[in-house]
Amino acid sequence: MMKKKGNETIAAVSTPSGEGAIGIIRISGDLAKDIADKIFIPMVPRKLDEFITHRLYRGSVHNNGGIIDDALLTIMEKPNSYTGEDMVEIHAHGGPVILTTILNLVLKSGARLADPGEFSRRAFLNEKIDLNQAESIAWMISAASEAELKSAASQMKGELSERMIKIKEGLIKLLAMMELRIDFEEYEEDEPRYKDIYKGLNRIKVQLKNIYERASKGEFMAQGLSVVIVGKPNVGKSSLLNTFLQEKRAIVSSLPGTTRDTIEEVIKLNDIPLRIIDTAGIRKPRQDVEREGLKRAEKKIKEADLILLVIDSGTDITEEDMQTLHLIRDKQALLVVNKSDLTRKVDLGRIKNELKRRKVVRISARRNWGLPRLKSEISEIIKRKFIKSEAASVMISQRRKKILQESMEAIESALSNIKKNISLEFIILDVKDVLKKIQLIMGEGVGDEILDEIFANFCLGK
Image (cartoon, rainbow, N blue to C red):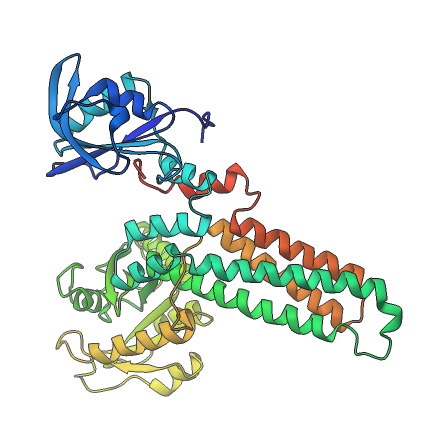
């Protein structure tokens, strides 16, 4: 992102594009009130300096006396505004031409167009919000479920920030305790070495692990779990996809190999988005297009969070089944026996043995039965393997999540050194490393690179 001067006045349309009853132009910076004074005429004649902060006033937006629109205007004086700067919002009619005309007038009057997320970035830099709250704002805007919205609202209130502050304070206390131990270590030979320090670090490790798991849950809720349907040709993979979607999304044919490419759709299961991916049938490719389809299927299998292996109840195990089993052997998988309304010929014991006794669900996609149990089994796997907690999820950037992982590894190093009875000076270095990483996660001393990653994902007027 291009670095801009912090005292520049910025402006943007803060409402979604397209027609609407109301549209809002947001202005922030030292020139915000001056710009408003140039382009806004109050209905009741008064000077802009007489406007009471955070109150709406009716009037007209004009360009050199020519009326553009009847509008409402509010001034929010610093420091009691979203950005911590002087802010102005113009509430106009929501036509794209109207809003573009007013925005261009604002830019012509001394502002520049804001970068994506720049209002929120200024709010962070002016200590109106912290990084956790900043990310919760973006999460609230993009929330696709009530569960996501509740989690984002909890994070916005500062619940995650409070936990991180307590962890930081705990590390500082432990460091002080270790420094004291170094000064008076010669008098403590009869005590177990560093026992209380070990307990304190282990307690912090558990707290960080909980936050990390909740961050992973937040990722799943926001991005969805990748569920890939695999199997040999003509076992009913596309029929299963269509049954999930309750519509004919994939072409279904009695001819094997109808699906040559991956097909991806999103469904909701207990408020968790699932990206259901139908793949080409696994078999020895007979032409280039099948070879490419198989290559894409294998890529999706590697990336998958959960595999639904579909087999045909009415046929014996084939070389193609074994080829598929080999591809998914180390993946989280659920065995789906389709066409269970037919006479069973498949050797389930053999396949379950190959899949390390994974769960088996019998369905008939053609007759549309067995789906409730399949969805129930998928839900159980999600809870057991991916969510692991009933606590509200949190949302942090990939970069900050990586730092969180590194902080847990640094604590593990410190715990290991304590067990080895290594000198306290080296353990202090590990704990100081953890503290530094926690401060980065909280946004203390954070660089432009991390800020760019977070705020670039915001919409233009936020």
